[in-house]
Image (cartoon, rainbow, N blue to C red; front, side, top):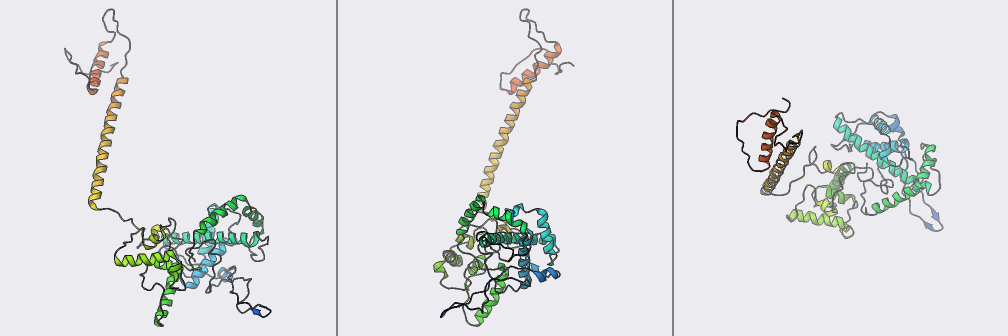
Length: 419
């Protein structure tokens, strides 16, 4: 299972050791076939990997397979290849090619795909591990399905050919709607956007269907054999890390002159030397690879897997990584004091506004029943009303900063109107 597949590379990748029990069709010449034209003999053509029908896998029982903590299949290599092939087979033959994108695929269908896959491989018993495997499997199906539709458009729609001889399991009722979609202006606009995005991906990995973890096991065997024969090993002096794995997948032949034509690998080598010399200190979020490339992809961990998010991919243990804090203890104490002062100021402002609101509300609750009779200089309020109003007005004046009021005579408790 390729860890960093794309629509241009995952479909065209070939694997000499596809060793899968899945049978494949091929329309190209065998390596022994030679075409002759006059006195000129053409070079043998490499056999291309065709469609996987997975006939033996369909009949067989569950295969034992192990997964890492992120849900990436690890071993046995034979079963890892079968896992990848069966994910692609299910997506190609079961998911309607007329659907525009994977997000619009019905959840019921995705559940059925996962159940079919689970019946062919022994899945982890732990629910969390099983969910990680499911997430990886569905992402693998998504990549295979998109790549399949891209191939159908390039090799059949644009050439006005029928695909059913090469893909007999493809449903014929899907084809007219698919042709209408891929020839529409909306699809062509998306295609131009995709081309622009892919043009920036100049350095593609050469992993085939293998993951980085599986490829690292293969490298270990190859390196041990090369060292025993006195041969050099690519990036031999570089410590292990995703930057080393990223560089090696883009230089499988071990060409020593790769740095002259590959600027990012040159940056990786330079940053590694600076790190060993102590002039560069990689951080959790900006390690050697992220610094060389310029940033981290938020949706996947470059150099680890396209199916693993950045949090889990960069973590050292089984839990997502924790971001390292920048700054000294004194700086954090100073910031904490600043935040505390702002909080106290906001609290005081809130209390002041609350007091003013209560005062206004108290004033609005005073009910003047009638106007006094100025001709006789007598009030029209009853004694009960006066006993209620006077203390309240005095209280409001006091809180609003008015002059203190003094009264003569006996003091009576406040009595509400109507009592």
